[in-house]
Picture (cartoon, rainbow, N blue to C red):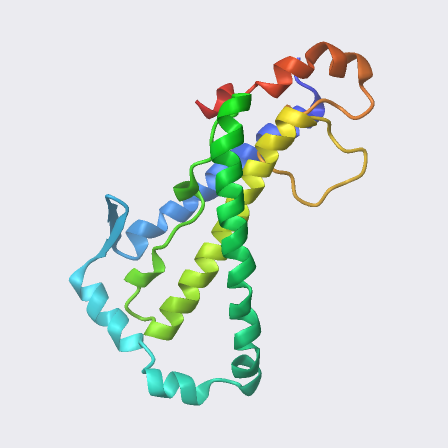
Length: 195
């Protein structure tokens, strides 16, 4: 029989799925379709979007001084981010098959699709690509870390944590030594829900 915590986690997952379904309804509202991972807008929408594009000269002229001054610091973060991406990618490629942990699909987390928005100028598109990459990478890293934690230390925390990763509901309750010893190997390899 599922615990109250498991019931709540299942409800959270159902609400996340409902939210994603609701977001997909925007596809109809804003007249686009997705075919083979590419987004296509109706021609009339493309024309309308281009009317909203801010010209590059105007965009730069309107930029706030604080935005210009902080840009190098924002973009400087790309170096450790790329290094982290390479390191974690190698880690997953080497270690996950050894331990029987299913690999995380990078394309499920790092999504580049804002370049199809004709109301963005080239600087906005580059900035959007940067944000898509970094935030997508962090989601990808969290999933890899969650699967790693499930294999090595699948114990729930006693203290409240702000954000639960997708594998947390599989973890054994904090302080439940008997279940931990009895079920650790089962829990380590319980990735059936990913198949």
